[in-house]
Length: 160
Image 1 (cartoon, helix red, strand yellow):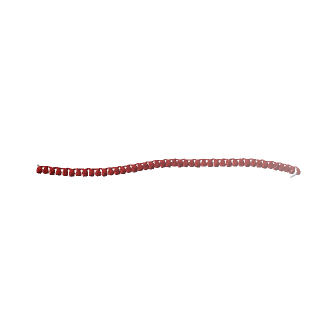
Image 2 (tube, rainbow, N blue to C red):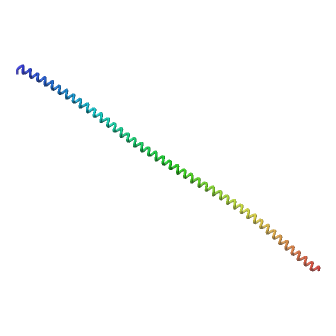
């Protein structure tokens, strides 16, 4: 091989080497671009995952809040119902108490009426006894008067 061929081969080799380095640089640049694209895509996916998780967390929190609100409303409804029942029971208790008081008043009134009737009856019995005593005295006086009249007529009859 002569020097010109050797020089040509060397020049070709250097051209190929530069071409190869340019190719490697292009491939490295392509690799960097792909790497950047993949990094960006990964970041986007991470953000989407975070957003999705945040959205899910928000939905779960909303569901939890709804359930809490429903429970609170049910509790309030139950409290209102209990207060209504308590008021009804209080009204019933008051009505029963009022009836009991009215019954007690009626019993007292009846007892007083019985006492009054008993006193009246005793008074009537006493009056009846007085009347009987008076009638008895009147009969005794009448009998005495008749006996005296009879005796006086007998005396007049004997004297005449």
